Image (cartoon, rainbow, N blue to C red; front, side, top):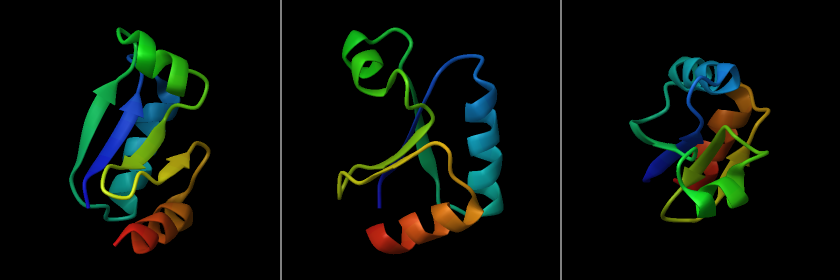
Length: 77
């Protein structure tokens, strides 16, 4: 599993997503900020935060909760 959390600078929802990932005991993930990348902004601009599994290319869009994170993690394992 290779998780990436796509997010923005100064993003309240992104901060909430990080707290939910901790509550779900998610494995380590990388954070990628989309603000200065035109391609990422185009792809994720209205969807952030987005949890992405690089191996499967599956994504979990906001809004999500602990249960949704756990289902996502089970599906990508």
